[in-house]
Image (cartoon, rainbow, N blue to C red; front, side, top):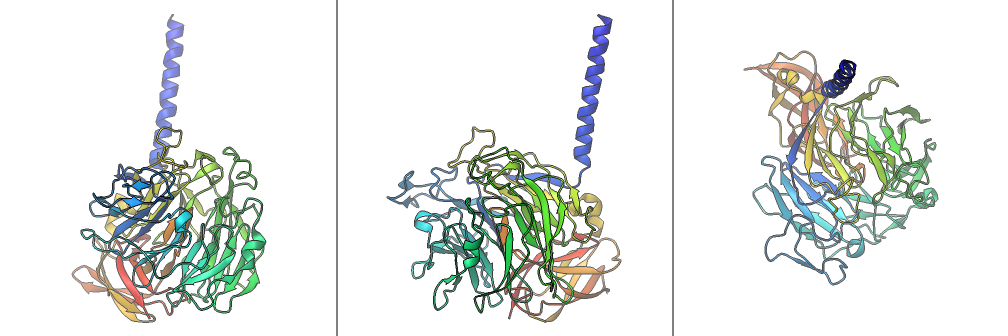
Length: 539
């Protein structure tokens, strides 16, 4: 009996030690999580942060009942909706970041797998979708959180081609290019251009038997041309001449776009702004979508290419985890956060497994092999139809995940209505004494304008304080459309009395480097960003 008790005691101590070590290892990883909203009412498929520090969340309309009602008397009537002909549920909401309150918005036509982009005046342009939304153009003019702005569906203009799974990118002149879509190998613009849509054969050329050319990755380079990536190939496109300038080498590792679910980001533009580097990470194995295989392991490879080089080649490296449906978020520092997704399967309803709960920090200035840092894991699986967006305070807002055709809460991976925020290590308490606070900055600056930014910092400033402009992208399907970080040219930091410092800044030189619009302006001291102030960049 004594021997049995001893064995039980040893087993208990061993189990407790393993559990404790696991908890300690988890606690020691950088970053922290917090729950912002326990029930947002909708699962956000599309998310965008506005200059009023509110967040627009958008699902699709033909999904049946959500968990948020529209105001009394504001039901949507649609005889063609097979599920709710009289729909009194909200399928879009706006989140007030100050109070975490949710207000329902009314959307009329189907926004399933649509696209979006902010216009120069801060209006969110939203295009396409499915069913009655296929050719629709919508606008959301954001307002202060206590006001009642709402979606407007344009009646005097529509898309030339129906666009489902397209990508939007703002251009140097403030217009928006709309690229591709399911069975739509064309390009068009908003405002509409004479001649309507133009053929873009590249998308047809890269389509395979499971598509893999949807939601193409579109990046505006600082030379004004577009880097457009679909499946495993990319081209340099002159949108003014409607001409492909060059083909880039294929990227090894299989397909990367929908439904194979990789992600992409353009690294921070800096210096003389002549160099642009594109990173493409993760993805499903070819055939996983056709076979509806939720167990096929995801790729863990990343390709990195200098898109502006005379002879560009892909530099390959591996993430610590295979990942599909990860979101790549440009942080104010120039690092990239990779978050959300799964380690097996593909995009599509109930076609992924093994959630990837560990975020990664990609540090582009480190050598190959040292660029990835594993961060503190979350506890909420974020799979198909989840989003990640940088907030003005430096946190990352995490929303959505609905791997089901309708809302389904009794499942291994249920429809997710919770909204969380992830705080990178730069927001940890031990760095609060070097975190800058912007005391003064112009609300509007012109291209090339020289201006001053005033900051205060608890401890004396040592070295350069950066001032970086971050765009507010439209996040959907593991890609942030229009995402951009521009590091401004700055002077040394000069003491200005009363614990303040003055930084001389030069605005971006033109719309190729930074298209016109509203940007989050961050002061960054020793890798720690301030709370951003919104600045409008104008011609």
